[in-house]
Image (cartoon, rainbow, N blue to C red; front, side):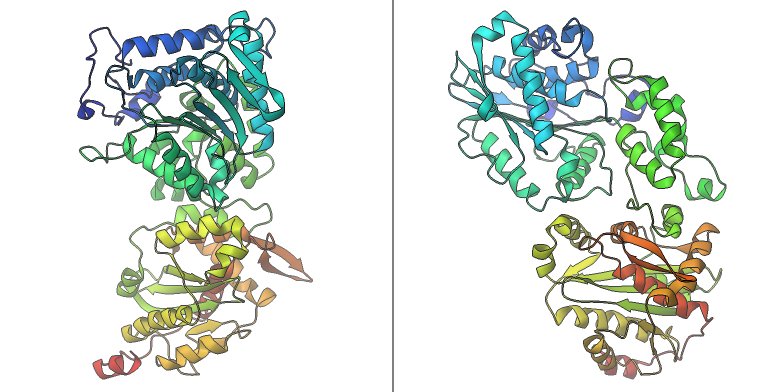
Length: 586
């Protein structure tokens, strides 16, 4: 229950506004509100809820009022949004709200209603409220719903004047405007006195290279007014979370889990309808034992569906689920991400490499290059690179000296020009750079950094004296020159053909992933790469190619196949390098 009684203090100390919700897993299981107990200002919260409850749905027979048509979960958002404003001291205690709810929860309709409530609660003359949709269709839908709600009420018709040609609703009392826009770099053009912004379907913006910049502009505009508040509503991404969506969701989870307690941060209220960890995923032991994922059980679905029984109905959802699961693993992932907020760990690709199906179950988070070298008796390397708009990929496979299982580690390099040429993946590449899984650097820094990693492996004494490094001979002159400069001999380098020649590695790794004898560190980079790989039949053989021209980057996966080919030849480590040798190669 949200605290908003009449005895709420007129001025609340910031430390009393703890926006964490550390008992969220219990709340999820018990069907309780995900909004923590907050000392809301009762008058503001009550008035806002009264406005919201009286709005009517324009596209439902009988035009029911929100008091009966809406779930309590969104009413809690309404109360938190406006009850966090202290009118006496002109202080807002919640600046951001992020609501993660599944598809079909009437997010856009509720968002349109919240926009009208914001206009009714506004006291700023000639101020601006914004609804921002990721696509024209979503923006048009929100505008039509807002105008429809106004047309259902004689009082609202007298107060507001819709201007359809510019998707704007004018308040005839305060002279303020509610503008409905599609996400764009120029989104704040002409906005004066910004007091409210609702950003719908944040996950769609994950791949936009400009999304972070626009979000900073929005927050900057809101911070110019003391009452400014940003509300973001979204489902989970139907691909690997990236860019601004990934960073905002991570921040919201950290707030929810209490990781920022005692620190001065931007006050965000997280309302995240996602399964507790024990339902969302399996442990490595459970995967090995063949345990079915618990989120697939419809009995667990209601806990992430706050609008169940209104816009979402379990029987039709189950029928849809059964249809999608018949289409295969990729259809299941997309469906689960949208309807159950299951976060996708490996990219979606209908014709992808089947080893990707087992990838998530092969994570060993302790694996780094250093721990791989410590545990291994022998190591092989794969290197794959192309033009300046491709990635330079490095894969390292070590054979565990105790279990003989294969351990792997990866690194990639990207030229800064890629961020300009491939804007559709620029946000994801920046994420990988932030996670220190990829280096964004000009030539020749990329091959020099790669060579230094190889020099570290040479110094460990774990590389075979022959066939230690598999490399694509095309466009490899600079790479080979750098490797020779750190002590790699010609015998160590094995020039491997691409395409069907790598099929044995594809099949071999599929088997090792499925039987639990291959491990990786769970890098985001490789999850992205796996989603880009497409398997094609060529004559009597198969080969991995790029699934989507331009967006697809599979170089680290090709490097993995090269390292796997060499490891499958059962190599032995060369001699241990001496201190003098180390000085020579470095």
